[in-house]
Image (tube, rainbow, N blue to C red; front, side, top):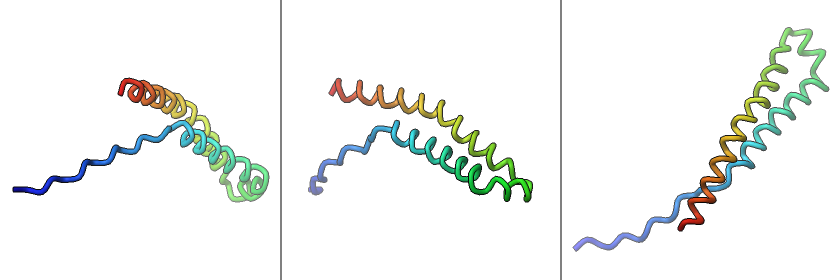
Length: 82
């Protein structure tokens, strides 16, 4: 007769909004650091596109934030039904 297996633990389902906000903050911080401390270096070496990359990362965070807010709302609804 096979041994009984212990019950599986519940999968992790943390709130996702903090991750989206942290990513946006990281892009914003990277852009500000580049803008304040390395602007002359970026211009001298023709790397201004790094600033645009930081801006794009920050702006793409808004749709990601909206998706994560919806995910968290659905997660709360799922847990309320249980």
